[in-house]
Length: 343
Image 1 (cartoon, rainbow, N blue to C red):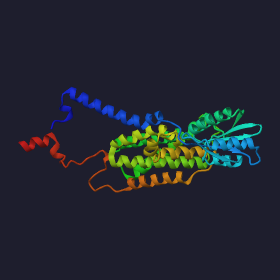
Image 2: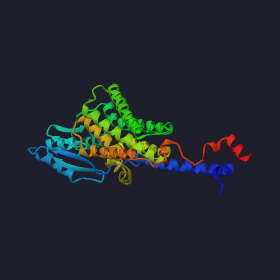
Image 3: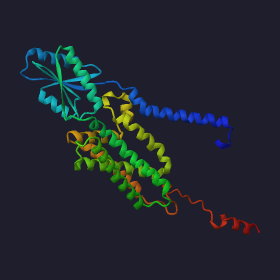
Image 4: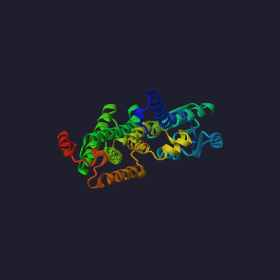
């Protein structure tokens, strides 16, 4: 059977066009498809009214609670209870009702996409009820603070990706020590880059030991997983690692209630990018980190480290080494030696 490069150029053109279309289809589904199908689905909001509030205000709260739609899910609570729900991100916004008016309460620790939807809905509800509504933001966040968590995730991934790919192409005889040295260096430099950018974008962003430690954990986990795949598959692993990077902004930049159920199940439910983004956002704005966001990266780091430390088969270098033993005696491959054999 003839190889592809031996086929007529028209056949090659059609085949490569098909490959390009398939790649575009996959990337479209993984990236733009998430954004193109954004639609509110049971966005959690709260309406808060004091226990001593006049009956008309209680009636408004009860009416809202009974008017839940497919797009919005309402919870009725006291102002203190509602703000606690907001701090734990169980709701994305609160509408506080009082005799002198309404207040829309938001939080900088909530994913900006969720905050935006909450503000639009709550302001519209207050206006529809004929009430003037002010806005209060807990843990206020600057534009840099809203961008930083997702940006840090993407930058740490790309730092490990470029370093790992370059190491795979350049290292002829990679050792476990060399790989680990690359992971450590990539992690340290990646965190330094992210921290430097944070300070440049907004000097008020807290670069505490907790924030830097979490960045280091995420960076190390990314570098170890990337290094493990590159060791197993060689440079071919870029076909997997590259698209994963393209998924990060599309998936991690949304709250699950805005993602199509198919994408929510197939992509958002497992992608580590959402854990790193949300974990860092919480650390930057409220300081309460979910332990699951730590264990995810600890598990990834352990799995990647185990693969990197696995001994290779004797006489069979790793794919990442770029050297394959074809079993040909070097002397026999020399032009002079061939002439001597034929003499």
